[in-house]
Length: 247
Image 1 (tube, rainbow, N blue to C red):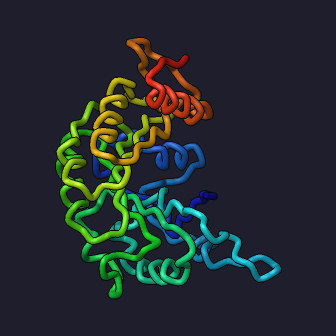
Image 2: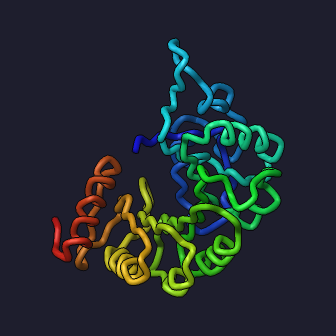
């Protein structure tokens, strides 16, 4: 499955411990921008509907679109734009939209009129970087109506016990990642292993998507360049599946 990004709006407000070193704020600051200012995309808002010169959609059928990953889909400032975004999602039933939020408590007041049990092409995820946020957000995720529900433990800041939530059923995947760039906090592979074991126990799909820049493996700390975080995480996944070490 091909993957792409769709950011109908940009900018956010820090609301959680995981936001401390947010990559959006970090990258915007390098570009001389203020990520705290929320703006509607001038050219990318209707990206899923754009066509090439032959009349074909530029975002091909079957693509997974990571939606609003430089903001939050349920941000208050986006209330006046969201219905138009839902209409675009409704019109592209052949594309999977992955919406990840720290504001799951706003979900029910932000869904479209015809949501029902959820759009088949929309997957809803919450991020929870520590135990406190897991205990706040995952119960709400379990209570909402959505066809697929994911938990992003990212950036992981401590070992988290979410086995009880996984045992309850309803969570389709857990994806874990460390923190990137300057000042990145520790991501310990031991935490990853235990979450992986819980997912295996309860039949939940698991993905280790990035090590982060500050990674501990077998008690040794590694400083990993951002461009290598994903490839090292792939090695980590292989190690988890084969139950053997990697370097």
